[in-house]
Length: 271
Image (cartoon, rainbow, N blue to C red; front, side):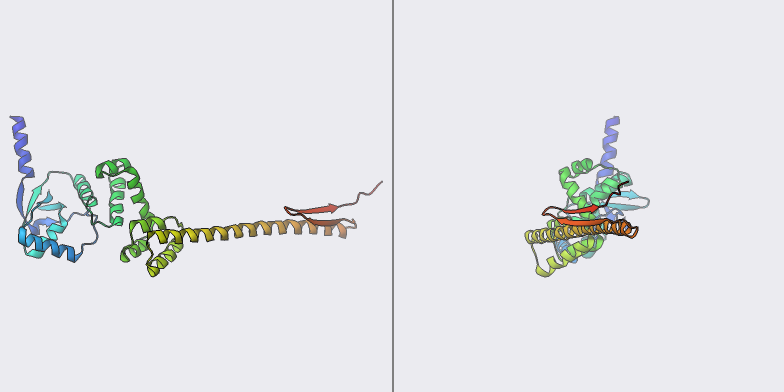
């Protein structure tokens, strides 16, 4: 009997009911930040002809219902003039609701790769998951999760440029080879201006890094030269000081292929 009662209660919770659109509040953990009017309009046309084929997922939140999944369907239904929409009411916690919303959206194909990375990061940092947990939850390899998270090393301005000019995730990953944000923006401007594909972008970055390596080599050699010059000046100053004191010291510079040799001669006064 107890099992029957539990089964009946579960059916009452998860059954499809009609919910007033005005009673549905958005999910604060929705990872999607952009909804394109064309996509919503196309979905609205489909709903107008065929109705809402997949109910929205909601949970009770006080006197209202908080959306778990179905933001696009809800927007399209409003566009169609619907007053009520079919919903499945889930009896779950706010934390579980947030996780379901994130997972459901991450698994969609039309999330931008930056939105996807932000949602994955939220699963890990806010809800205490490991990368392995998130990978298992999303059905992805752990290395894929790690690569997604690396995208968040790019600054918000860099991300905005990448999205605005429809560059790919591979473009974004290639830019991560550059550690300096100024360098990344400079390369980004060249990629956009010349409409470079991923392969050409990677070559541009490799060439840039090669030139920077040469510059760094010059800078290193310049520092070494400055140190050698300081050492030589110290020797010359010491010889001049001895000469001023009446000691007939002198120095001689001998240049070899691999090194410079300095010989300092100081006479020894015999008793």
